[in-house]
Length: 256
Image 1 (cartoon, rainbow, N blue to C red):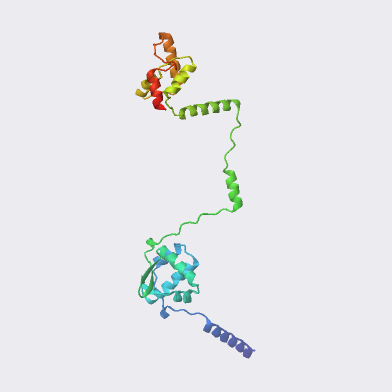
Image 2 (image 1 turned 45 degrees about the vertical axis):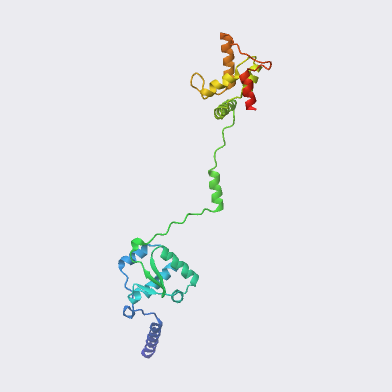
């Protein structure tokens, strides 16, 4: 019985020894990288991708592992250390340089890399904008639609019509009439007017009325003149067979 027990214990010891011989057994005296606790704490708070971590660990190994601040590291060395493809290595290196976590130096000898230990200079990544699925976007857009306008009533139609008419009259630009237009309109209302005097008078005032306001409707002003002449008596005006004064006829020819 004792002999059997001894054989079993011996077999277990041999198995443990065999396992121990193939287990990793890293020791600081075989080489180590001196990294301060403050940097480790800063690294614990930073968010970088797994590929960027692998590149960063390789730089630590090649620099701090040999008690150097920077070292010439080729893409082949990065590939051998990380097992990554070279395009992925280049992309990760560019991101780390852009975020100022590593320092890259190019010269005739090659490219050297070093770790930026001033973590205050590290740039934090911008948060990505959330992308909603199509169905959610459709619901959101539907929810943001404006409410239908109130159904038009007699009152609102009247108000809208008046408002539009008023807006149109405000926006309409006043255009001074010609002598011919003044004569023709005055004749249509049975009024003989000195059209040239009418136009010269208001040209001189910038087409402003006696109250200082700008004229909006010259035809209404002609009607006012007709009313005043009727009340005060018409002024004698010499006209030819066409019903025009000599000055009106001359100016009309010039306008043509």
